[in-house]
Length: 120
Length: 107
Image 1 (cartoon, rainbow over the protein chains, first blue to last red):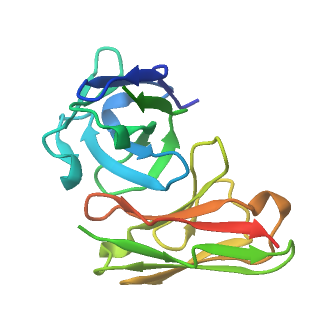
Image 2: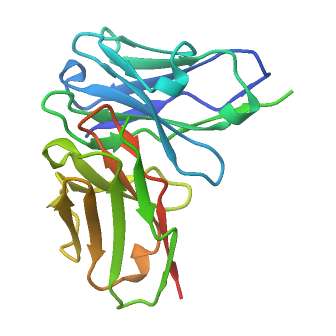
């Protein structure tokens, strides 16, 4: 069965960086893309960007351009999301999620989420 | 960037009632690349509807989606106790964006 297993919770200081991993199993990793979506406490879903596991193409939300980098390691079927220059309002649960890039398709499987807390 | 605006913010209804949720886009959503998700506390979202009106695998037929262009609707024909949750629309035709959510709560 399809599974996306994310790395554990992180606590970071303002200005630091965080890198969250997402290990996929149960499907052909390179046939899909991975989106990253975050949710601040008590708030809605915010799309951060996506990466194609097929060719590494990325598409980042304009708001996060320059602070976020998404990568994949096809040898281990793992996706990564790195966010730099962390601020307190980056505190959120970060989800990875699978979708078909072409033709465009919605997210059909989600990881369990990783809580990132930014606090001095 | 396409902005999605959901209304109402909160819907207070009783089990058995009909729920109608709205999602309006700031520009036309190409090829009806519009999805709806349900999220319960402490859980990841679950896909309900894609392509504006197609139910995802395993989704009961009391959930239906409609609309095109800039106006979309999710209808729950008769609310079951497990349907009280937050619902998000998402467009996936031009990058991806989410609406701010509609909470369906027990009246």
